[in-house]
Length: 285
Image 1 (cartoon, rainbow, N blue to C red):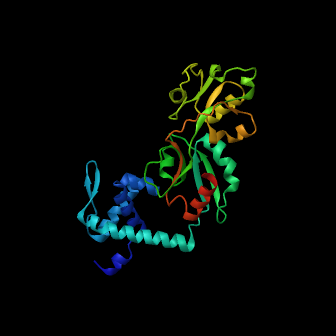
Image 2: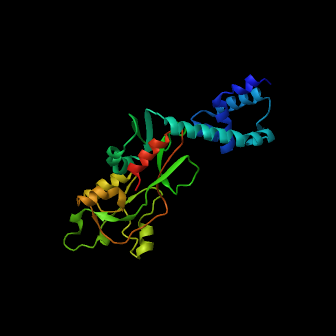
Image 3: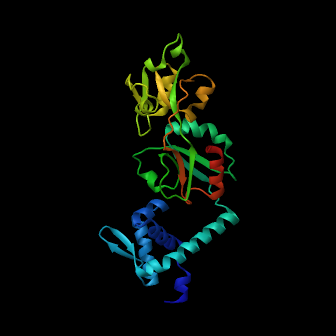
């Protein structure tokens, strides 16, 4: 093999190899890089042909690194890390558009009110997209994602937006005349978050009345609570504005503090280091 063959290795081939080796699959590499699995396989095949060695052993259920692949990986990882860090420090990553994906409720109650506070270096367009759970295309596209969960998983960038805290709220007029809020109709939001059952366990309150109104978005549930439809187990950070202008009233000093919360994650392909710093400074507390 000539020196010129090795000195002209396409960088995208090398990055495909590193991503597949690190994630343990061509599928994982495709998801991270925004390419298709076929494209990853093709680039690694071309790299192997150029080097004259097998970097992966193909098996029925996936791939594993060969001896040559294992030996080369540390050098590749170190080289790419050095390249990325130096480029970031010297030039920054001059992306013109950053795509930010979140639920409609998070966009409305947390992100949109803070967009004006984002001091992004340079002229960068931020494209806010409503998360669609069934959209396979979003899995392939590099973007900043806000998701509810425990924050587990390997990401280049990861930050918790806030520590969630839940407590009952309602429109002030519902408790006029000395009415007990525990006797009022209850509202509920579908999904994985803690609700009235967890509240009863924490406080000893009854699990009744059972909520007769359920919503698939937090925004709709808040609108119903403001209109006087009942008592909502609300995320206090997300109803700061409603509590501040007294359109909603907090009803208890008790607070549910779930282990899960809203996390913002991104890959290096989706956002630069300085851009990530600007996002976290504005959106995280």
